[in-house]
Length: 209
Image 1 (cartoon, rainbow, N blue to C red):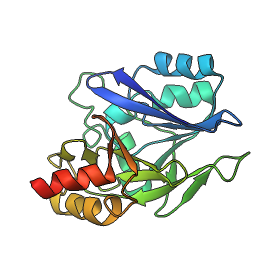
Image 2 (cartoon, one colour):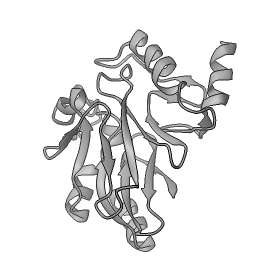
Image 3 (cartoon, helix red, strand yellow):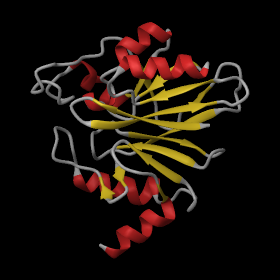
Image 4 (tube, rainbow, N blue to C red):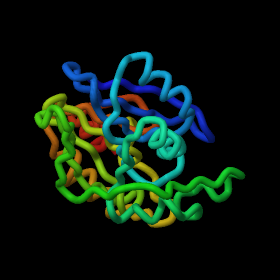
């Protein structure tokens, strides 16, 4: 089960829950803001969050992560190249907001890693590096649900932005072509700031540009 919750901080951002229907355990992806709202949603539904996963190191995707780590006793994970973003307010873009944010407690994921639930090893996400928006941007892919959490690598209207520290337009384009558009055509792409779109639909849009 995949549920989306839009949270409003400095920017509006899509936070996602990926929950096993049988155990009600699962993953929280990109808790950008409104820790109280996210926590209340989890409690109200009786979910147990085992891990908090970040698609990249920008503050609008992890603003609520540290508080939720404490309340849920769930570790935070980020892909290795973006680990330094969590403790650097220049890189994570929070330095100019008036409310700089850092995350001192986190663990790192790796290229191709399979992240599984403790009590249902068949429920998992695969880590697919998709650099470009940031050096350590990743997509979390579930073949079972035919869905991919792409963060800011891709939006409904096209590629993500690269005008931030560490951004690289060529890398982003290669990530989209070689890592995302090669997923099955009916895979639903779930981004941080737009509505869902399938791989097939996104491919058609990009070909028209």
